Image (cartoon, rainbow, N blue to C red; front, side, top):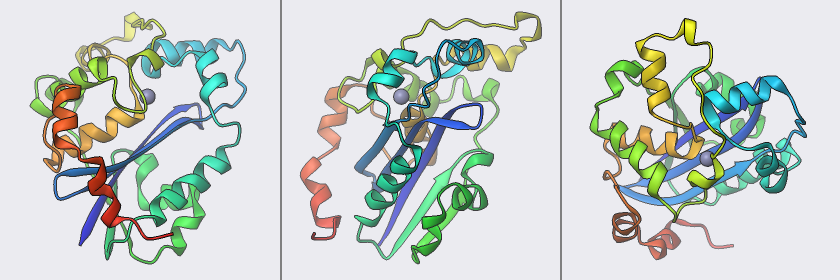
Length: 221
Ligand SMILES: [Zn+2]
């Protein structure tokens, strides 16, 4: 019995502001971990530039919905992970911040979970991803889904393609994808690996996801 955990972060500088992971088993979504982290960033031009270019989370929402303690978010994630009663759990990410080394540095408690494995996915470059089915499904899902813990209303800062003089086709493809949400980026990884069906709307999502099916895989408290 092997479960896959797809993980992703959105950051402001080195600080994680959105932390998400999804648990997948036998082409079913078992559970979602999602949290904003409030670092008390106040009117900061660098934040606004990052918001406009990628994550698009309004500062007010970070303050309103974000956990004030990053360590508490990490702790909650570890507790969430420990809920799954699988012989093998593979944590899968994309990018330097989700390697085994980076994750264990960021969350040292992971080292003490003995049946964890780590794996990296390399997604194709943006310009190639643009027309891929897994990418289109993620892009559509993140703008229309209302059923999931994070949705478009949480990423509503207007997006601008700043530094236009440095724009290239890959940057434009990234921009056309819209806001980056760590939760939907986890779904893209699962769609890319074909470990989840390509949901295109809430109805399909609910048809596929049987929330009760999560229970047998959770340890009894
Ligand atoms: Zn999000």
